[in-house]
Length: 130
Image (cartoon, rainbow, N blue to C red; front, side, top):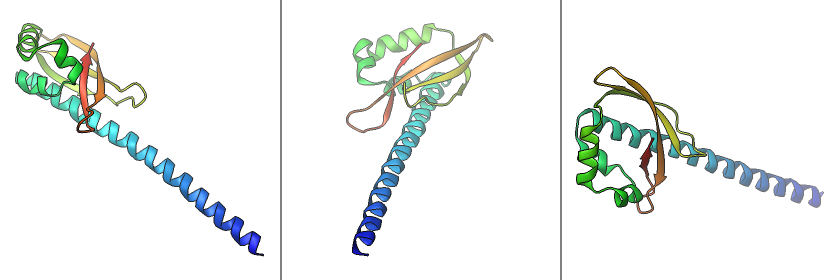
């Protein structure tokens, strides 16, 4: 009888631990998706408003090393202006998100945003757009 109760207790503990682990993974994926969509929205909202400094502020450290604020501002100002956009679902495996973009001249494109985790804040940042 005691062994049966012990086995049951062990099963409950292990099962509970497994459920907790699954819960943590699901919670982490949801956080990545929410933060990834939010930072992508912030980036494109700044582009539409032509607030290029705000868009630059969403970039990861690597992107900032590749391009200064001034270089980014000049480059983005010379590109076709973003008139509207629709952010797709974040892929938590590849940390990418598709964005359907409409430009002020009427052209359309699907851009792929690459995300990265900010090592200091733990939040997501834009690390590239292709």
